[in-house]
Length: 169
Image 1 (cartoon, rainbow, N blue to C red):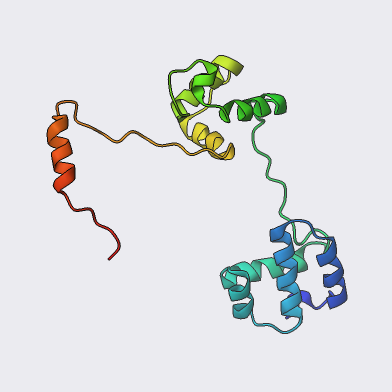
Image 2: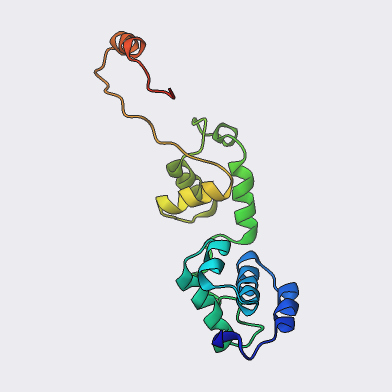
């Protein structure tokens, strides 16, 4: 229990009440559990992580001031290409079908989103970021199922009728 020798359980309980965020709170709760004598394996199972993660969490309490120990260091990313107002405007637009904005498509796709963002905001994103933006707006996207343009629609329909679908037994 050497990691927590210099910290009282009262300090940990006080820290728990002041801690904001689910992960930092989990870290403090793990420290409280360890201070109360719980084994690393028990804490790992309780918090749904591996034992190494618990050890890392507890190491923070030895290496950093107690107020900082539960929190991660800031991880700055690149600046956003859209302003907060533009992002809000985009999310509002995504809640409407594309037909409302003059497009012929019934649903948003990553490529359509990229086109809209380029036209509306003069900003370019990757297709993977477009999928992320759709997800953030609470939308999902689908890709078209491949279909042979030479296939006979009547034969396809007959095939679909004769094939047994796999389902729960």
